Image 1 (cartoon, rainbow, N blue to C red):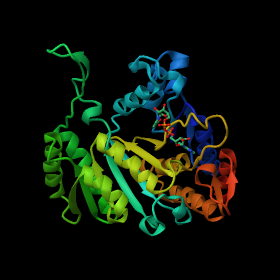
Image 2 (image 1 turned 135 degrees about the vertical axis):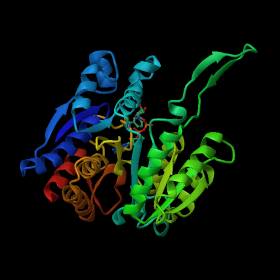
Image 3 (image 1 turned 90 degrees about the vertical axis):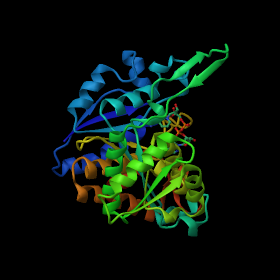
Image 4 (image 1 turned 90 degrees about the horizontal axis):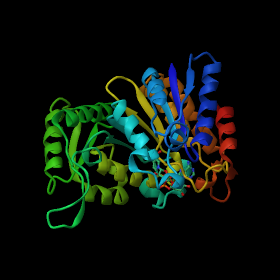
Length: 354
Ligand code: NAD
């Protein structure tokens, strides 16, 4: 297993280091893993003048999977847009054809109090959000800023989905629903936006191939409300890029901390990019304070989705559960009565629990 490791910026290197320690426990026991490091984001801009340099592209193309920390930081906010770290992220997703973003929002029972919602509303929460990642208004052309016919400045983007793009993400979502509670909710804004009316039509058509899955549809504004009101009504949610971006962050907060949420982005082969759902957290970078669990669980998802190693993935997830059950917490999920750990100490505990 060739794994490209892109630590990135901010807390990226700190959290990726802990995930690598956990993976190396399995490697030392005999799983053949090779790690190849490469720069991405601001780190890559500093070294190569590009947020996704050719050197990194080559390594990612040759790898079977990519483990990523996070990119971005205030020092890069003044750069021209194409050079900004976040463009590196968009570029790698597009380059590797990573169209399916899987973001589980799972609430560990021990963290029910970390949520801002009442424990009874969120306890036992287990949602999978499937977000389309390479289309929609984030990539649609034309886009830009211009002066219009009336001499006024304006900004514009294009919301667009082709049939094949909707079909392939719908198949991924139905496939996941089949392995879980067989309930899929497709989120759109079909009452206002033709792009998503089209989306809904195609999802219904793909659904005919999965008669066992109960398919429902919800407008995005209602979905945003329902996630707060009664999140446990959802099993799998499928939606486009921009709605998925927002809803998956909202779902992440149901669980108490963005530092707990893993993600996988897959292409049509088993290649995937695995990263925590959060950003580079410049406010706590370099202080050994970050929660590495989202990255560690992203590594578990990598073993499951790219390499089919269900047992190894489960072992990592169980180690995380055990550490939480023992009362260990990083600062973001700390509450009185638990033991506060640094990022590397949390890594120590997960390694020990393995
Ligand atoms: P962020 O997710 O980096 O941080 C939001 C808040 O959550 C901060 O208070 C941060 O300290 C906290 N936080 C995040 N991850 C944490 C962790 N593992 N442990 C403990 N606390 C954690 O979002 P932001 O502040 O909006 O963005 C910061 C930078 O990250 C920006 O440059 C942004 O563009 C970039 N970003 C990158 C990604 C990515 O790499 N996938 C995603 C989102 C944002």
